[in-house]
Length: 290
Image (tube, helix red, strand yellow):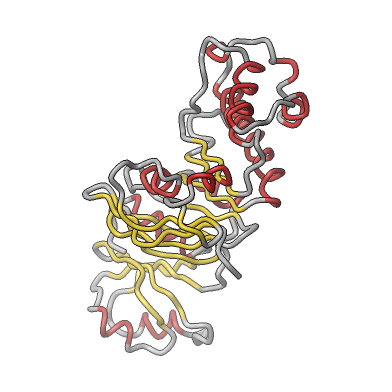
């Protein structure tokens, strides 16, 4: 299947090393990373909004640099919606829709529950209302590709949940990429996750990959080779002092914990983890190696 959006070696030193990815049509993917991991820069690059950037952004297999009209297929919503503060909700929406030759906005106001706010100035909106309006403006021309940068950051829990519901409703007809450091955004909205660190993808996989992970604590931790020599241990995801996060093989023996305890390494705890990508994100966010 041809990717809806593809990046081939997008580069802008020092902000972005050679970055590549491919997004399948109709799928919601998350860019998960701590603050300053490079998520916003990546979205700007995919939207061709980084002057001086090298590399090839492809939309439906075509080079977006040679066909500027292709950019109409992308809706990009930055973390701070680019609204005109002294225009009303209706005027903002009419302006952004008009940029793409669309004039009917009543259905869009209704879709995003903005009818009651149509005459309110944008600078008088709450954070959740601003993001709703920003999303409505971004989708006014019905683009098939949607890029969202930290859509729920700074919102209270109720506003964040309402916005996630809107995104879930709009996502099935589109290819969506969501950049966030908030786990609820990724867990509730995405089926694929790219873990980002310093502008690079350090992990890529489905949210529920089925891999088994264990967090263990050892008084005298061995080196990697000794651990990996044990039957059932597939890899070491992270280590910090005596705490390790290990990946188990699918057919790891049920007695593996007991076997580790018998090695003389001083096993103190053996705690199964739920999601490998989310566990690796927690490791990155606490400064552990991955």
